[in-house]
Image (tube, rainbow, N blue to C red; front, side, top):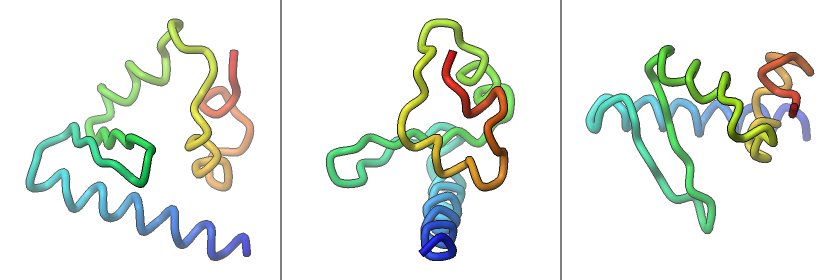
Length: 77
């Protein structure tokens, strides 16, 4: 089950990167009722992750947990 989740996450990331080639470094996409924002520029990602405004990360951050663990990027607060 874990491998299936990781493969699905990789597919979503790959598709986001593919779309960003056509539409630029910031792409929004709807996955059912969830709005996904793909940022491909490291400076843009840094601004969001370092933000003091939203301390609670969205549930989608769990996709990064296998690679990043429970570090500062994943934890809330």
